[in-house]
Length: 162
Image (cartoon, rainbow, N blue to C red; front, side, top):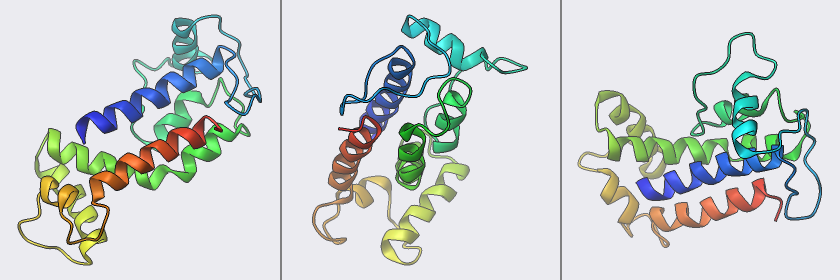
């Protein structure tokens, strides 16, 4: 789960930077860029500083809101990338909650993870940890982890307009 979320996060970040550098969507349309950097490094610098009164120290790619904020001054807000990120925001949030509980396991992540358990079980269920949630067949087939794998592919394909 940690690797899946990291892969999804890195793919979104890479796609955003490459779009700014002029890469086409997979359906061959061009993104509506507001700046035209010539390299990935320049694209990242532009995302951090272009049109901002205070440059961002680093870019966050785990929340839908943060992804949109990273690209807000460099990619036209009407570009389909923004709509795709918004469409899949709930899934990214759910996956982030599960990933954070696995990686950090503190009171804050536990509280967020309970929301995911509540969503799947319809109530708080004692003894459900991330491993059980992700791999149990009690929630139907395929298991939640397999759903996340498939859904991650859908998110990436939607972002890239494949």
